[in-house]
Image (cartoon, one colour):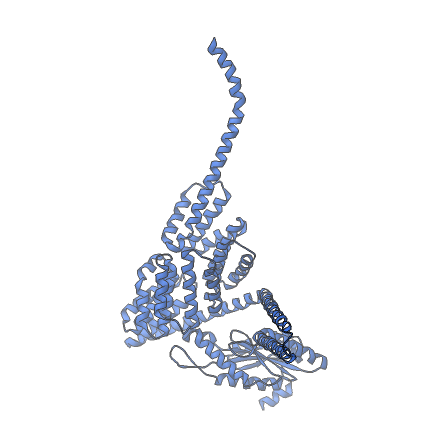
Length: 600
């Protein structure tokens, strides 16, 4: 009886309390799920540095993640996909990595989206899709400047440094590497940034580099980033080959060669083998050099760049010549010509993409330059005002001292203003006008000519096969040649006739009050002056020369708008190139009597 009543009294109480117990259980389960998701996110974040420290271990960890059941938490899903995309990129599966990273960039949370965009910049650069990489990088740089997470800012600057190295822009690459180093990077990121800075200095031909510096950077990295150490080895080998020290280059390449091959990066392996083959060939070890070129040829089909293949083909040709094997030398020479043609086309595509991307980002660059100039002006004015207050406080000093101080202040401002104006107007490599100043001055001249009813002509000059100068002798030798061409063009200038460098190896000049005959005559003088220019190559001091193709357009045919003149001259330049180069073509039809006179 007692037990029965106890049960009757207790059962309603238990039933009444059941919903509360269930709610508490659900809350506990939700808290446990959140804790589990937070723990997995922390583990995935901790996994990211492993791709720089131990890429094979990172790839293996990503494979284990794929085998796990799919998580319910969206943040964990995005973090896992980011790991998967990086692992696919390390394995050389660039298309698959791009698909995963693109999906993340379109639908992931903000931080993961930026990280996916950084990976896409690296994938675009590796695939030599330079225009896409530049456009994406511009958006990332804007996001980074707007206050992105410090880790994302470091990643963006590292991606920018890598892209600028692909574009052979060492100054920009070094600047971005320095910005990454200034942002308190992780050890692996620090090693990668310092390796990129070394590569930029080698590419720029820094005269203060030494073998000890490469060794110090390797020791500072230790085991933190084997891929970065491999890039330091390659940079030292290129530096040593430039100094005609093949034994030193071979030692740098062989010290950690097996470790580099184990990382599985096909492009780094091909670059190492191509450099090693050339060093061995110069040391007379022809058999070993031939074996390394065989390895490069086996990898070449999967490489986005033809540089390692071209280097290997040239080495094989030199080996055949050294062995006196004429049939093999002839076959290898034909292969070298094909590789040179393909690599020259690749460089042209890269240069066009760079120029297109540079044009799209010109507004942002102009705004940044204006902001820098404004800040500098404000700082100067504040400093000048402070100096002026001090001067005015010296009431006891004679008036002559005050006037002298004001005169000196005015003179310094004029000198600074002139220096800033010249920096914006003149191309520092050739000494010719820079493109923006040329566009502004030519537009004014053409508008004045249109009002007066006067004629004018425009010459568009492009150096023939200039990319081969950079390929055969290096970019620094190419810069020497550009300086020599700039000197030859400056010798033709006058008060109202100034040449400009539009970009790369392209130049232009506007001839006021000139018709087609005067323009063609001056174009031939220009072509002869460029053909006579010489520069000594850095690799073997051989004299380097180039020829030029020139397109001529006049306002009589194209009108007085600069863009129409440029388009018309570009069409004529294309015909000059197509007709065999080293010639002048006009974009207008000459009168019949003029044609008869020229034929006679």
